[in-house]
Image (cartoon, rainbow, N blue to C red; front, side, top):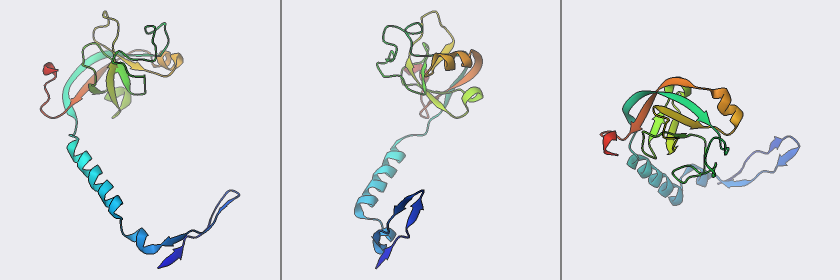
Length: 156
């Protein structure tokens, strides 16, 4: 059974009615079913992260400028291009996921960079601008290290 979607007016743009096979809109295609099944399997294969360690650290911020980094300010120590959610920490392996609930709620950060060796007990959050990093300042906060259930951080 053919039906027409009602025209929509968006500002001055008129979208014309498009013939739609009503039966196709009501039942998933084999392709859609396969994609849904594949995504369900992928989600099932990805284990839920749980808190495996909590520790109190100083939390600072840095930006991608030579004064605060080495001569490749947009490349992390793990050889990745900087991005929102990346942090530097010397006491955690690359790829470790952490949260800083008191400052960022449920946001998950990933350790992808390192700090100067003298920075013990610090986590440095990447920020897109120097002003954002300066505005953030320094905070003493509890971090939650996340991992798969049964993970022992000492083994990494």
